[in-house]
Length: 95
Figure 1: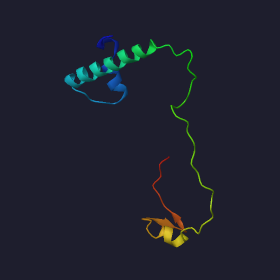
Figure 2: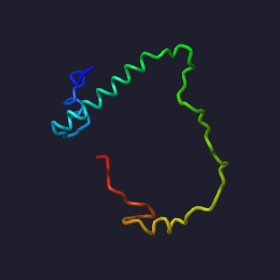
Figure 3: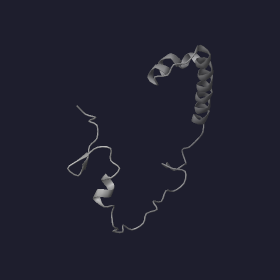
Figure 4: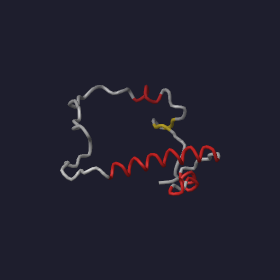
């Protein structure tokens, strides 16, 4: 595998990065090494290995819901930079 296989210019455009030519050379070499390693991994025989999403089992640690007193309405609004009619006023993000 060579750096020609990796279109650094295209990748930097997609990632919206501005790299110098020296940085492109370094990144290209690093990506080339990664792809070589991936090719090496493809040589492994994994036919007898059970597919998994994670290397170790995941268990959610949760607690039962408990009803507790909430923050009083006026206290919640006390630090709001803008408020009206008991509501937070925030900048519009969708036109």
